[in-house]
Length: 158
Image 1 (tube, rainbow, N blue to C red):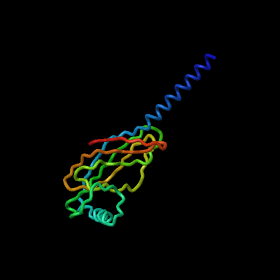
Image 2: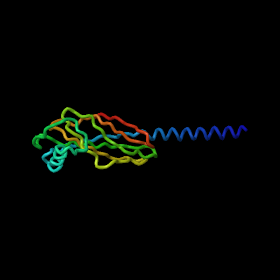
Image 3: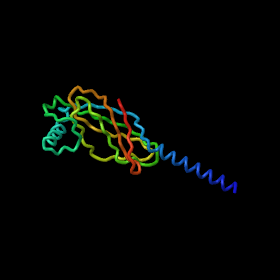
């Protein structure tokens, strides 16, 4: 009977350690955020496409403010690249980057795909904002994701 109790205790401890590791693995780590700025007049095709989508009412991204679009020289595209790490073995699905808008932010372009982060990997995900020129690059970023259908989020401030 004593041997059975020891075996049962050992199995319980192993299952507890495994579940603890699973919970630890659901916590995404944001390793860093890089920002790059491209003047809108250097990406005129994208700027005109976004402006047309907004005027037609078919823009799929997030609009922060109603803005009458002026000349392309007054705007720039701010691309934030977030390096994320998944330390667990379960995949993180439906990764979404949400940016708290600054005073100069006009809109956030829609993601072209819904990314996933496989287990035990590190990857870069990007989002692009249309901002007024000179708005800076510091932003508060919230990354939301799902593990086994349960929602999680991580906040990062630059």
